[in-house]
Image (cartoon, rainbow, N blue to C red; front, side):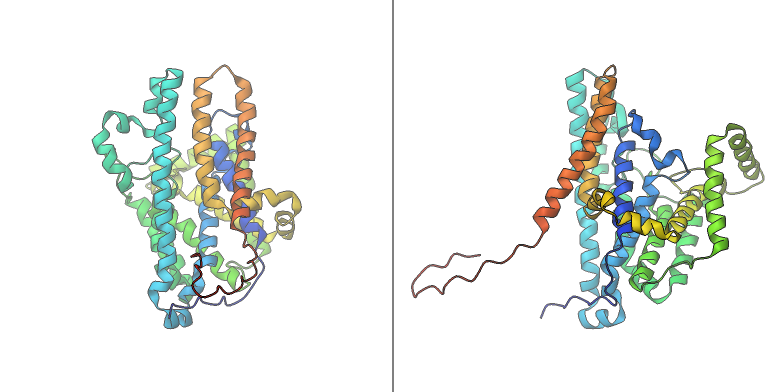
Length: 400
């Protein structure tokens, strides 16, 4: 008999915050991936050290825990076996891998089309395409091996690698949240301290989104999701902790917007670096998820999770479009990536047409909503037709 699907421990309504914030993160990623448009100044990266990518990894971790964790509980493992639990997680990682190859192929095609159409050969050197056109043999090795990643098409590889580690993380997290949190913290620190990263080829260096560092956010999301399944919080509400987190968010905005204060704060970090502090504790490095960035996204998640009005707002009719995009996360991300790359080419090919930078991004968001709506409509279960009369002897019955 095939393994039975594990029953969730506690049936709870879908949390609107997960889909709404994931949808918002995907919209901001889309806007940021078409640089030069006026809407960039309103995305989260202008108001804090972290940006939509950090939010994407946290929300992805939460979603993974909610989707897969029941399969790793002791009863489900005893009944269905380990492979029944691991298979859907790794199957999703395989889907991400194939999506990454699809997006990479189309990114190359879009920029090659732009170089030909607009007479801009310099497009063939943008977004890390130089190796593809000038060192093709090596690039064709690196692309399927995920060691050569194009700019703006480099989030999914880290996500896929983290999904490969998710079964072990869920196994640990279900038995000891503290153990998983300590493992994630130690791995994050060691990755930054020793500059540990997965290799690039044929370029030097490592992955832009270093999975050894960014796992700290993904596994934090896993732990949040595990507690959500139980109707509990990972970190209890505390007036003191809320004040500290909110205070840090305000400090970061002032740090970024008030020039003299920002210079003074950055100088203090520089002084700490001179004194021997590890670089990932005192910089704003994105690859190694430097501490100021990490603290910012954690503070933001905590503050938003403590405000009851946030739940009501994210569940409102007004934010239904964001929830729709969040429910169709992978399709939205993939479609948004291709549209954003196309907009990059259009902007560079038409530098004097300023109106395009105002008009095309909103049209792109509308296109994402239409794509997500079509996908959701197609995935709704259809009512089964009434059974047809039994065929008479000798009649041919069409195969379903």
